[in-house]
Amino acid sequence: MGSLGQAQHQTRFEPHAMTVAGQVRTVDEFRASRAEAWAELGRLTAARTRRRRGDQVMRLSRLHREAVADLALARRRWPGESLVDALEDLVAASHAELFAPGRADSSRLVAWLGRGCWQAMAQSLPWAVAALGVLLLAAIGGAWAGADVVPVSSRRDIVEGAWTLPIGPMAAALAFATACAGLVPAVVVLAWVGLESGAAAAVAWQAGDEQTAAAVAVALAPLFTAVVLAAAAGASAGWAVVRGDRREASRQLATGAQVLVTLAPLLVVGAVVRDVARTRPLVAAGIGAVLALAWWTAVVRRGRGT
Image 1 (cartoon, rainbow, N blue to C red):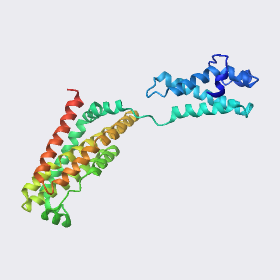
Image 2: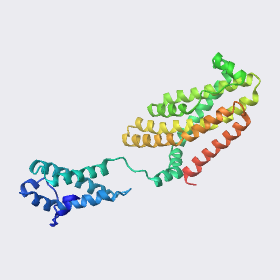
Image 3: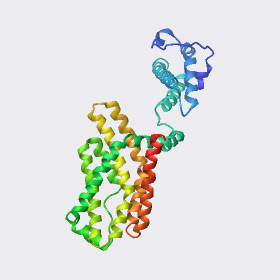
Image 4: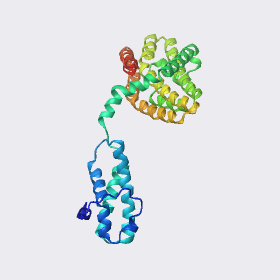
């Protein structure tokens, strides 16, 4: 605390009330009248605890504001005094403690991954079921339309066996964003995902590669799962906006963004499985089915708390 610690007089000045300037004549009187508050602010700043109670945060904030006022007064009336330098250090340290980015808390991350993310997904499960229905209906429509939907260049790749569906991690991000903006755009994105997938599988089937077509359809299950859950998370926020509940919309948007980040590993693994299906369709189908089933089971069981 430097020269702040020189004060012997311990007077509790509560509240600050911005009347210090009229009560003190010398720098020593000023130091004596404010020493206890400065010392308390120094202790709170030096604690550097990961979690503070609400009253501790409020106290730290109040003492910081008072110290800022004290610093302004000291600069004006006693420039060049060592007290000014000590107050500058104290204010800088307390400001950093109040406004610096929060420290990582591993327990919160563990709690989110262990239960929180699954509960968030389970809460939007009705939206997920609706999104899955839209996607599957579009896939059936794409399979029925077949070659009429797939571009000629992509059709050639499918027939030759070197084909990969244009469904990947970006589809989940797009589904989330459009669902936040409105239900109709989200339906369009989900319909596009299903249509592309169903049509590509139909072309492969018609080309005589029935095994690959069926295997790839199953291997896409992890990607479909991630896209559907991302759309559901966005729909929860979008519906809150429609209802005019800004607070709930903000909460759902923040939770949905966390869900989208949590889905990233599933999206990455799903994309890898999708690509593996080009050369080892049966292996990819097995991995995709197990992964998707495990994810949905976790959503239902851990999300519902059963």
